[in-house]
Structures are given as structure tokens and as C-alpha cells.
Length: 181
Image 1 (cartoon, rainbow, N blue to C red):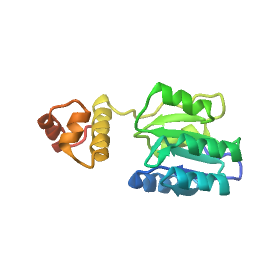
Image 2: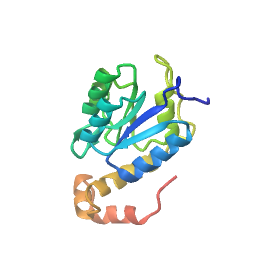
Image 3: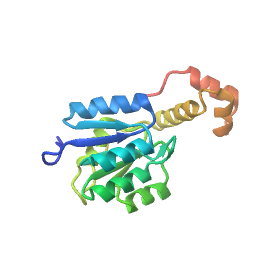
Image 4: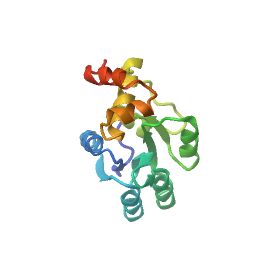
């Protein structure tokens, strides 16, 4: 299914504090026809939402200076019809419900690629987005989660192992291997 932005307004706000991910997603969404603006904090995202409310937004749930739900609320106040996807590495039913209650169109768990984001943004209201063509294996999801926690711990193996309730040597062996497919 080839989805295109709805109408003439292709403005898209991306809010995420993971700079490499933000750059990759911005480039991918520009290639898909969106006019992209990025922010790396709640404060910057709210400022853009108030000054130039976009037609579309992808907002990370946990940011260094607070919760992305504040950005969602600011955007809903200024532009109620905008389509907003909340994106997070910490998928939980409670946060998904909270995001949808305050006006998010959809909720995706990281890692999500540009195609997943595009499908979530452009799926008509009331319809379900299509299932991913190549879903990640359970081993890949586990590996991605370990990598994310490792980065959140500033690449500290001992702290990562403690947070994951894993033996440090086991974690070192996992980190030394290539990512599963």
C-alpha cells in the first residue's frame, strides 16, 4: 500500500532525544514527501508546536527534560486535527492508553522504521495500520532492548547488567556478538 501525506500540508514535527535516530528518521520522512522539523527536548517540541503547529508529529515518550505527552497536549491545543504518533523504547499498555487518551493517533514501540511511522501517520481514522512485512525476530527485539539499555547506561556494562538482572559476563558475551536478524 503506497501512502501519501493527506492534503497539501506535509509539515511533520519529530521530537526525540536520540540524535542519530532523529536524523535518520528525518531524512527518511523527507524522502517520503514530508516537510520535516526536528526537536530534541520537550521544551523545543512545545515551542515548535505553539509557533508552527504541524499537520503530523512523531513524539518520543521519554525525553531528557520530561515526557513527550506534554508536547502532544501542546500540539492538540493549537491544532486538534493533527495526526500524532507516540514512539517509545519503553512500551507499556498504561502509557499507550495515556497517549491515546490525550490525543495521540497511534503508539509505536522502538525500534520502528520509517515505513512503520508512515503507516501509523497516514492510516485513515478508525482503520488498523497494516502488519509489518518483515517483523523482527524475538532475538532481534531482545538484542535491540539490550543495546538501548546499554546506551542509556552510558555504555557501562556493570550498570546495564544490573538493570537487566543479568550476569555481567553474560552481557559482555551478548554485546560482543553481531546483532541477530
